[in-house]
Figure 1 (cartoon, rainbow, N blue to C red):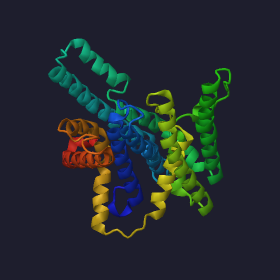
Figure 2: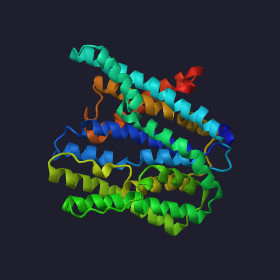
Figure 3: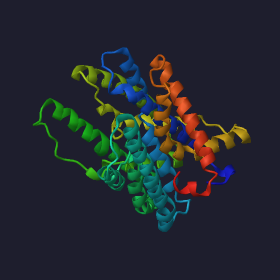
Length: 355
């Protein structure tokens, strides 16, 4: 996949869109918790936050798309040495970076002393995770990569109907059943469904979904159904979150979860849509630009929250103008600055171990 001519451009586009979506999520969420839910601005934050919840599932789908591909030779030792070790280095480097940033920032702006206990806590956060809120994704990714050799055996030998069966189980028992249990318990604590398949309540379903949708052709009827449910899921997340939050008098993020049937349909719809509308009509120069941005997305994901804090410090926040415009504008600025830093940092050979 490193060869420019062999790159799947739609995968690069998805990776870029998902990275930008994460930035929008974090920019809009910066005021989501503190703004009264009845204010109009909170509804704007909720709108943007609800529209980008597919980002992490799409990241996982992209990983599954490549790692489960039987045509791509990936030995177990390669997964450990090339991918898991790289993530561990990234956790250590960026964990130390963000913890140091927090300690120094609190010392400068809040006069909080730098103590040995605080330094030990910083190392503890790196060990047990996560040292910074968005780095949780790296810990989850290690788990998926450790299971990849086993998953590859299944993907290589399974027929389409067997993978489809797994995805149906993931949907029904990994997403719908926990969601339904939550609703029942909300009305009456006695309405507790004890049956569950806990092995399916994780990100492995998205991992296999990425491989499935990249390998097999989806018929028009199924595709249309996913688009319809995807659209309805976006609407449900927006209005459902607004309703629950206003009813409770405070922000409620339950419908923002990654392991929900609504989020699944959103992610599936975005993935299939980009794959379907992509046409190989880009010029070689455009493909190269897309490729360069895509190669920097891991680093952008890692550094963007620090850039966000700096950009916010200079006044370009999620409400420096009307939030409807401020959120995309500040997100574009954060993405652009992050990309520039990572693009040049990637020129340093050691950077490949941490970004």
